[in-house]
Image 1 (cartoon, rainbow, N blue to C red):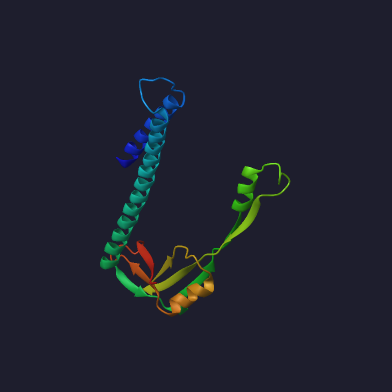
Image 2: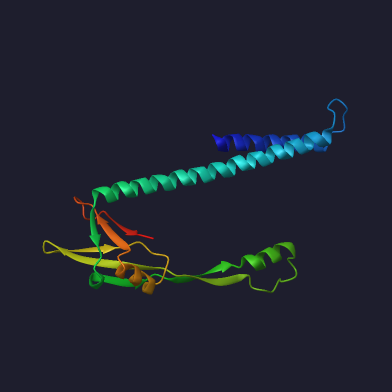
Length: 180
């Protein structure tokens, strides 16, 4: 709803500024004041749209957190044994546009025409594989990526900061939880 109101305000801003930019009549007094008013109206529309996206993002994050807490309350909690963990590196590097150079290139495109605007960005992440034997059956649990290197992940496991929650009825449903 807030997005629709925001879009309506932006459309009104667009139409009003177009009309009052070229208006030279005498029926409506103070055209510059109306022109400014429509621009302010458009800014309020943009604010409505941005706040609706922030609010919807928070609602989604809250729903995910509630679902995770509900899952953890009904699941079996397993404290990880360091010897049964295998730590793997998931880091990678990729090319991204340098924001500093791209903004200079935007304002002065001929000043750095021959300069490469791409930089290599390294994303450091790691994950773990936990293997546990339950009733003679070997279960393997693979975690999601954690935003730090293998050494830090090992540190968290050794200090019991990572727990594994496994559904009691379906062992294929599980969740690794990092306590911060």
